[in-house]
Length: 91
Image (cartoon, rainbow, N blue to C red; front, top):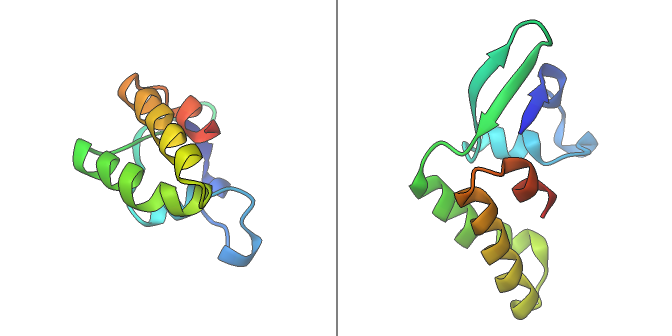
């Protein structure tokens, strides 16, 4: 996943993406920077954070429907395992 510098600096009441929330809480970190395009490469920092994201945070943001939530979490886990951060974020 890539983000621009303005993607990180958004007041909570004006957020149109949850990228600032994930970054500020440590669920995603900056792994690289493309100076030419002023673009940051984002990733999940480690396996423990990935598990916390899948088991603690995401279920509360998806739906109270357990079957749908569990299915979505599995798909997010697969995308994360395959390093498909864009696909994970789409889910």
